[in-house]
Image (tube, rainbow, N blue to C red; front, side, top):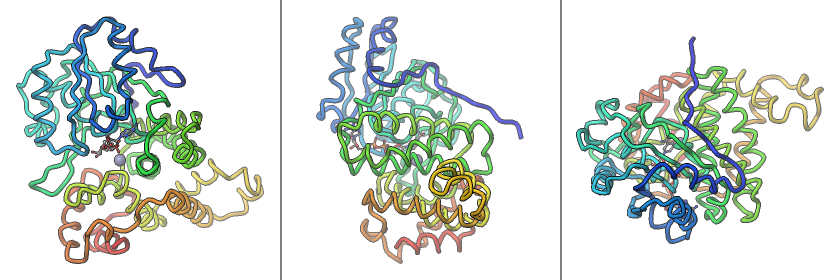
Length: 388
Ligand SMILES: NC(=O)c1ccc[n+]([C@@H]2O[C@H](COP(=O)([O-])OP(=O)(O)OC[C@H]3O[C@@H](n4cnc5c(N)ncnc54)[C@H](O)[C@@H]3O)[C@@H](O)[C@H]2O)c1
Ligand SMILES: [Zn+2]
């Protein structure tokens, strides 16, 4: 199988990488800064705004972006953006903000609408360059050509994928997630974990995606808990930003699988946040996949812990199945420690919703075909039932 690696134009990472903004922005004049009210009111856009002004840019802030946007909400923001006549888009936000900013970058002239992109994702052409600065760690949207919008008519979330949406510049600066509330840090961190393990076990996995997925998993298991509970753990926070970015690179090179497929209707119909719905579906799907992914699970175990606890002897002594079980136990322990909701009941979902969920999940064939073990409608029903 041939494979390829697509990356954003230039990626700046680590301490003080935000200081690169003037250097990036100096060739532009009018900036549209995309963000949301939660982020702006937490003071997170102040520094980027200052640095853009220092570069001599005129900055218009669009701060009414909704979380987990519908395609109509995205269209309304893009319309507002068109009136700005910007020559650079800067997104300071989580996946919701970055996804709308990416859509705006290929829809500036108004010749194509977001609605049309749902059926013909490639109609948009890159018109305005983007600088993406994630404030969650995270979706990895800064590393993907994807934008996810809800389609209320279908109770679903749909991924619009167009290589023209790859970012031109990315900045990964731990300061942007220093004050991220622990609950959001936990759920978005498990989203990154899901990206990595799904891509590693995907039918589309390849040496490029494996490299980034494994490194993401290593960083997440080492840093996520500390990054969530300790505001000053800057090394852990920078690691999580790297992990989320690597997870995004893995998505671009490979593709997520049944966890994301079955989580889409949970976001689309019940408005469960993306990270939480993935955290809820992750273990049931990974257990379901175990027999088909023994080799991959064992390789993850070896790579992360095989030489630690019992040393090389343990690596050799454990069977593939035991290694897979230990990996699943570690995942379960991590999610439990982070206290992420684990049941759909908490969100008002019950047995009468099963048919709709199964139908919605089975519609996401774009991702289900990547799953190593075939998921039938009966399997999907059993997986949802496990978390009801
Ligand atoms: N394009 C992709 O490749 C991709 C991948 C995965 C998910 N997604 C999409 O991304 C969206 C979810 O993004 P997300 O999980 O990053 O959450 P989000 O962008 O929806 O943000 C969640 C909440 O966190 C707040 N917030 C964000 N950063 C903060 C900070 N530093 N401090 C305080 N509050 C902060 C926001 O105000 C918002 O209320 C979903 O729509 C999902 O489908 C896209
Ligand atoms: Zn995701």
